[in-house]
Image 1 (cartoon, rainbow, N blue to C red):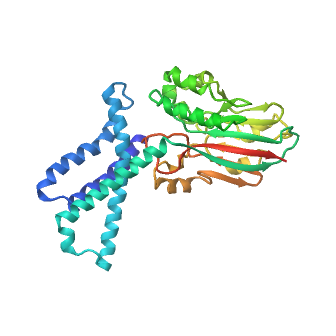
Image 2 (image 1 turned 30 degrees about the horizontal axis):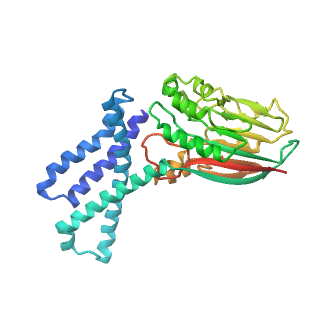
Length: 370
């Protein structure tokens, strides 16, 4: 059903775009060729997603890859056509361009070329943005309690979405940048691996991930994608030397507590207070929770910091504005009561291999204990 609604959200704007471009820019002699070309390109995504699924043959994989770029391309064609219609609306009032000028072939040709060129440029920029890992740096002070530490450097990522065909070079870029930050602890906030591909991840990727260096080790929690395909069993995390936490809490070097929650898909998952009830809040507490959905609950507990992902910050502009309405914090840092919340826009993505909202980031938080 999810893919059905996604396809519907894709098809309806494309119907609008098809008829508007046909009416505004296409001359009579080219309408048939335009119709054939548009329908063939627009059909790639629904055919690939609804009939090929996660096909294993080369043609299916190629079509699925192309469809991802086309989804983003048609989104920005749709927005560009809307902008052009807005221009036409204001043109009625201000008469910037005469009716005779708008009917000329040269005007229609360059207007359509601009729409296509702008859309391609945005997609290309989104691909570059996706594949460029950036570091978001934060500095905060939290109560020391009985900890012997004066400071702690935390590196945090989420939404890696590693699968069978993940580019090993991107994984190498991540490990290189993470190690350059010299974190005391490395945290993974879920959706690190696709559950259906967990047992298919190459040894090269696993070997690279094992090279992450952190004084206190690497820890993670499951996200919703780890459970897709009913094959996610945590063996990926074990092979990658990541300690997977499922509604558990650990005392790290008698200096701070690290708690990790199961994803909301698990109806049996424990509440924050249930996880914390076995400890006394005599040390700073860090919580990993894949989705930033219950911030008020966590802020009323002894938790000092919570790290989450899942939102991707919308991934594609302007969807980030819609995502902002769904979450109290959809990206960045926010302090509620005595708890600091961090939500990352994700290390990679899900769906179209284009990121025009947010960035591929490692969050680096330098904590000072006082």
